[in-house]
Image 1 (cartoon, rainbow, N blue to C red):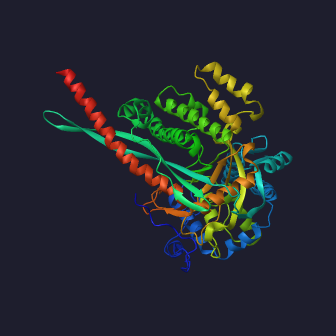
Image 2: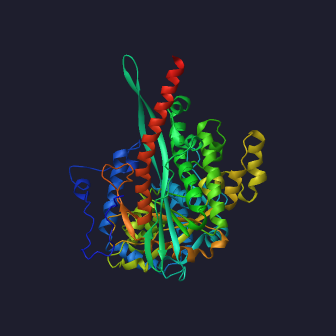
Image 3: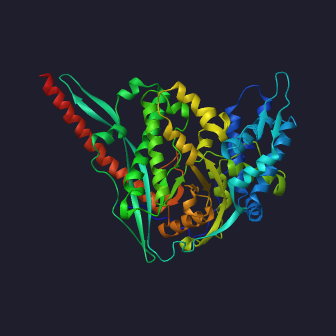
Length: 539
């Protein structure tokens, strides 16, 4: 199959500063940008201008302010950094400033939704009616303990090497991706022809074999002829739109993709006997797209797909643990601001007093791309680079259980109530809450921020060794795989957003699309033959 041109991070071409520049528009005397507090209602134009200005400012200062921040953060303890960040945000929020509401949301995003802290550790109280005074209660001792157990790395940024951590033995690097295909089947009738739409999900994978330092691809892994049991989860027929509310339908489509990829990962990679990969760099986050217990219990097709995704994910994690496989997601559509918020704050406090912090914070992917992209980066074999500290995030945080329940007694304080009320077995969900902890981090592997970095996140259990050694193995896998650029995944953008991803992951993406087209054609023929059989019964 044809492959895309490989991205060469060590190209001798002169790197270029990004050319995005909206300052002439924003600062034009004929235009005036009002602050949010200057108008009574939410102003989307103003918010868009804030976003544009933040991007332009960050990109302009890539070689100056952000470079200085990179040098400082190579020496800064991340636990101390986050503690200072939380304390200073408390001070700013309680000052009754125009930014209090926005900073309060940012504190919640980082501490509660990112790190998984509880309301007892970080309590944010909105102003009572008739007042504008915010209150933030921090349990500093508990926060320090939480940071100590959830951050790995001596500094916020750390050098990382890809020495041959597998020793001299051969090893396999696997990847998977899922694709979604929309098609239709024509229905000929006496007076007119109508097309009935259907949607099909499928997954495929690539495996890279490393033997005595040499790399080669195995044959693509996929299922060319899914049976009816598998089609039950792959094929979304027109009845779904009739039976489900629009939101449930869209969520069902998302969970269907999760089901397809988890099933593939388990059958073709994690449980593949002697050809089982040592490390899997799957496309996308490890977390399911629908992780809430309330949605797990819905009694319709959406609930069925949510439950199946949870069950299949649990199979994958158990298999990865039993066979000591590094199960790693390559996440491109990153929404968290766990790294970016503290970077913005640190620059404003320690490096550039006029830096616009807390007004509009870019997400982790955008800011870590700016922070880690370095003109001096040498891409030869990815032997050494810089990575962020690793932050632990649990399934309970993704499911927002840290906001709803006592995490130390979920069984009695939370799950028991659901089990009494519903007749659906939630054992698989409870097991995920017990075992699913992952570490996330960013790796610098580009000369400039023209391509966005993904977030690497891996399922962790004690059998894999230290967290830092796993990060080194991921970099080693990148070294042998090399890296590529992916322009197919663009979110809310007319122009493609390019991402740097492992070549083996990009190859899995290509296989998935090609195989999906083949299966979609075959499924259309199957539907047509079934339709003709029904017609013969009517005669």
